[in-house]
Length: 488
Image (cartoon, rainbow, N blue to C red; front, side, top):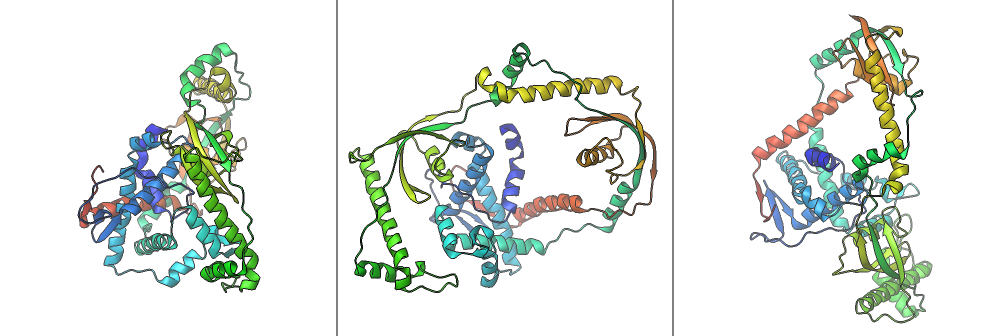
């Protein structure tokens, strides 16, 4: 997987960049200090657009979280360096800046109304089908973002979308004509479907163990973390009317109804008390966190031992992510809220992933072994019978005739016809994703008058991909990019 992703990382970044801004529940990831030019906090200049250090770190953090998801929690700084994640994060931002320069050149802008409309239709912020500002604030807070930062990012993405809408990629008439010719080709085919139903496989350890030796690096345990933690006891205090009134007056915007109107103190009283208790609990958690670091915890606080990993995590992804970034030299985590409680955690040790023993890997390995041996035997059968097979003969088929081959279900039939019309061999066989193999001979070929609706979607996707790459290359030549960060 690593080799493939290193080879194709350019296209992975384009995929991540081209999507609308999305939430990733990730901890903030940094990578130390750099020296800058005389523009403090600016890491790059692209035309008239400046890229800040904060933007770069957010871009890096999101990419890190994306890779960590792909690697199922086994992504670390070593892999990040191997993938050149810092350079990828910067490239993502410079590509975005190139497009923003072009948008500014055309005097494009996103109005507050457009921004608000987009924001209030993002379902991640919905409660009972309606945009909820409190959920919006809470999610941003969990993702280390302010409303201003998120709305700035969203405005940029809307501006880029507006720019690209002015540069539509269309399929030309001659391209449609070529597609029409392709879909008008019809083949009369003799075919035979081979399946692995009758193939038996010896699954004894004598044969399975050498197979495991070749594949064992693919069967590893999860990276896990031994921690000591305690849960902060929730505080429920009594508060004077003056304390409650003062807190309400200082935080009125916290107490609104569904229409966004501020609720009176009388109606908000329970919620005010709840927030005061929440604040007191958090403050006590911070005090206990400091005491834990100094090994001065009160004797009534009992520590618990636990081993956590991606698949065995009783907390949440944020806590696991932060534990994974902690080191033995700095093992304590500040209080983290999980549901309605605060947890204070100390990392005891990191247990790296390791190769599973043959016995531990056997249950996972067996299905793969059976499939591979069956495939090998089925390919041998296809090769040995290709020149002599006798099968069923179809009428003239086009790529759309997915119901013409009775022995194949729709998806298999569709895959067979797609591959058949992309091959230049008259007599061969086609291996399907389902494991079946279809032997075929093309008996006759002709053009027919096809009345099928031409699907230009794939051609449009291909043209769009080429256009996006070429557009960025052109803009890179047009706008000067200045990197002000040492080490990238």
